[in-house]
Structures are given as C-alpha cells and as structure tokens.
Length: 281
Image (cartoon, rainbow, N blue to C red; front, side):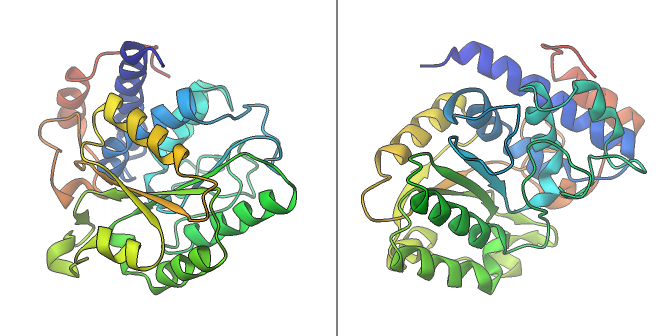
C-alpha cells in the first residue's frame, strides 16, 4: 500500500499548482480539477504502471485518457510532478505557443497526451479502442478513463457503453466524476442523470462506487476493487462522488468555479489553505 501521508501531501501541492496555473493564465477550469485531485494523484503515483519516458503507443503499460479535457490543470500537474516534463513548464499554462493548452492537444507534442480532448462525449469511445488494441496485442495492462457526470448527457457516451459491454471490453476501467455540477448549474436542474448505477448496470457494466472521491484512502481502495473486476467479461465503471472545488473553502460544492478563475486576493486566500509540500513552479 502507498504511503498515504505522502500521497496526501502530493495532492495538496497539485491543488496549489491548479490554483496557480489558472490564476496566472486568468483562465481555465479550477473547480473540477480540484475535485479530481485525489484520483489523479492516486493513478499516477500509485495505481497505474506507466513510464514518464512516454511511449506514445502505450505498449507494455497502463494508459489513461481524459475525456472531460477542460480539467487539464490537474492532469498537467500530475504529469509534470511524475516526470513527464519539467515542473517549471506549468507556468506556461494557456500561454501563446505553450504545449499546455487549455484543453489537452497533441500537435504540441506534450508527453503524456495521446489524444486531444475537450469536445465532450468522445473519451470513452477512444478508450474502448485502446482497450481493444491491447487485447489484440495480448498486452495485459489496463485502460483508465475519466468522464464528467454532466458529460453523460452526450449521446455518444451511451453508444460507447453498449459497444463495450457487447464486445466484453473487460480491460477498461471508466471513472465518472459524480460531482452533480456542470457549467450551467447542478446536473439535477440542467438535465437529471437519474439512477446512474442502475443505468450503467442495465447497459451491462460492472458498477462500483467510491462514496468519497476526495478521500485518498477511499480512492485507492475503490480503484483496487475495480482492478479485481477486470478480466471477467464486463467493462468496469467507478462512480466517484466528489465535491467540485474541494480543498478551498470558498470554491467547494458549487458550479460557479467550473470555468472561473480566482483574482489576486482570492488566489492568496486559496493558497493560504494549501501547504506548499513539493515546491512551487
């Protein structure tokens, strides 16, 4: 088992990175990034078998695909902190000619990014393709993908759900950031998602839950359980409950910070709540 204390310290630094990236750029999406920090930290520093030297094909390692690409700040932070590119490059987020675009892109050649994302609804389909490729190559490693709950309003997601179950894509773990928020407000008001566990189960998936996706130990246990269900004929989904904006008291639990950044005074208030543990960029 990982050193929980160290993972929590890393997550705190990642949150600092998120606030600093978005505030320095005066644009970006801090809310969902803060809410998914435990997940990304757990994946890249404990759960996934991956190589920062970055073989783009992903052969011989686990692969991760981000579908809700607007939460790029958290992904860039963990990629940099785990050695894919210099931590100092985080200062270029959303700047002209930067490799760190607002939504992950491929033509800049940023290590760790295999497909562009941000047009919502597409990531699960891409992940299924990668998972099937691993099966063809007899590669036993897994595919992980993250989607937002508001993103489930896209029809392509449900086509992908049917396809994955029909073709027994059982080397895939999909994770849903179930925070109940999207850019226009609570998902329950914009378009209710209904009984998500029952829907995924009805489509033929193995359905698991993480009741507190902002607790590192719960995330690690949930992902470990998900891995135990792979290779058994069904794709696996983890419905992970999180709080948008978690870690900063005035940002938590509201859609307001989905795509809004902090001003100078708010940035100071936020950073005062997040200890610098690994050194700022």
